[in-house]
Length: 451
Image (tube, rainbow, N blue to C red):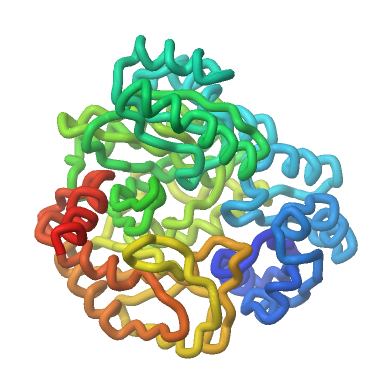
């Protein structure tokens, strides 16, 4: 096992990784920008190093500076968290060249699965169902218009690189495509350094269901059940739960085995997630693969009792998986909500100083955050400030626990999405398990328009 690990990230995920490292007796090194000098991840680590100004390209995306700190501190490995450099194959290569273990898959696998176009091709080769669409880059709007005619509207226009809903839009007709193509292309280029676009047939009212996998360096691979992540705004997840109330045991097993088959085909190692869209007839289609730890990983940990960060570290250190597929059990139901510093009506960020930050506590409650009373929410980074996770014996009990916890959550000084989360969790359709990706647009936006 490693004696020292550098965490190339910030905020709550850096704090999360530090917690497991401390449990395993591993010393931690963190890096921070000017805006994060007083952050919790800086205070909790054994060592912390300043790496630049607030903009991410001058700090958290500065590969050479991070490698330099790792060498300087004699860190044997780097944990990338999620976002930032976690799926950057160039950074993984630099770690490999510097003789530093990257806690994740190999660079070539990240590159292969990081391109949504290439990953579609790869999955089709293995026999994994993919959403009808194209498997070539759209160079301009004319090429896009011809492709859309063949697929048939509505279509989903997507950026090939990156995620988080950026450069992604449902398009109903050619006129709309011509209006939106260039803007989405530019946004993708700005955020990911790659404006490549492609498109898929838009599937009406799908579920967004993902399969968590673990694979070691000795050929062992298994799945840790599924997470349902259908409650989204702006194509970004806000509520996740495990297990899904929609899957039956047969489909659950089929999706899990499909993910393992695909992971073996690409010779995947470490933790990863296969994301699928599932239609109302229970047909599932490959959406993308995330070659890293997911924001929503705690719900899987809660129902399986497995620390995914610990498994990541053990796999990266060359250990054999400690479990077989038969040993992966499910216990209860877990729900996670992402708490954002944002206006609950417009979903626009709400940066500023947090005057009061009081979080709920209890036997069935888990908090993941890096802010406290007095913390500042910077406009330079993602506005997610915390995650709240609860576990119940069943789904309805978990929902009840979550609503109670959110009632006692107290944040003052900034706006948050807590009112929106409570509306979703108490909605009759959510309680009935009717959670599709258009839930927020269908139920919350229409309700606010009526008022």
